[in-house]
Length: 387
Image 1 (cartoon, one colour):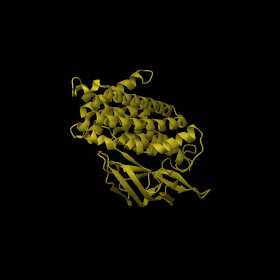
Image 2 (cartoon, rainbow, N blue to C red):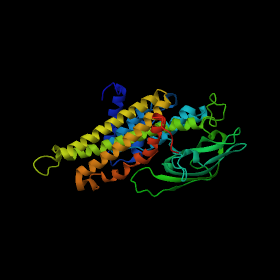
Image 3 (cartoon, rainbow, N blue to C red):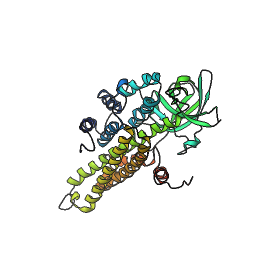
Image 4 (cartoon, helix red, strand yellow):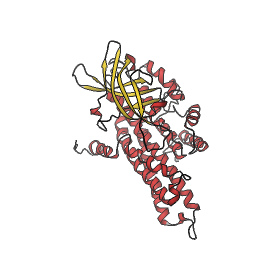
């Protein structure tokens, strides 16, 4: 990897994480891998050093997830706990919230889930119906969330809700830290046809009583107007850009893993007089998949660099493009890998068939490719909206 694209430190991190991933492999134990990654400082590499993190950024955290994925052992909660939740708290949390959560998120002893999607809202965040009502002592939160990853292993969930603006009467986005054992906060696992260590859940918030300090950023006067009630949308988008960057890393890692398996097979499998990889019908599609994964990685690196430099607007465009490109490249790489192996590509022995379903996740979540195309057409090209 050229130092123009990655620094020596980043290249060393990539090599070290790759070695960790190779030690655990596709048959990895999630808890064991999470624990070792935490001890090595990889989980909180993006979090501030003063709270126990590595003091680096999204560029480094995306390297961690990509390399683990390329070894067949991706940690999906890296997308959620340090990338989304850790970033939001680091940028907008009160000092008390930072002290309470960031050290644990960095050393892996605490985990946080993220709840935004609702049954009837889909991609329309303006239709979120989870609402927070102010009380004398804090808040009462009511609503439902779906497709929330890892709630069963998380100490708390960062919930996107809406509060009423006393000045206008309109509802505005706000983020709340909801402990897993809060009364009225319940979960039920969604039956997914998807092999993953991290399960998906539906959440019900039935008049969950929260203290005042559950609101990320505190009141309107905190941090020069960047309090929870004044900066909910800003907080939300600060978390969504890392989510898209990390989803791209997840997809690129998965695509690289599938491609590596196919290349190894194509070098050894011989049907006539030469390995099947010598035939252009096999070699060219694999080469194309490699090119597309590398192009997606470049856009991901651009998005991470812009985000770490504080350019949220530029990072928003690049992160969406990276997520789109990586999702498409991953699906194509997995499809070609399975096709290269033929019938063997569908066997449990080679471990590729399970990726047919998993690879589509990056096309669907956390935002569909169609909504990304809407974003690019409106924000980048200036075309009128259709909705």
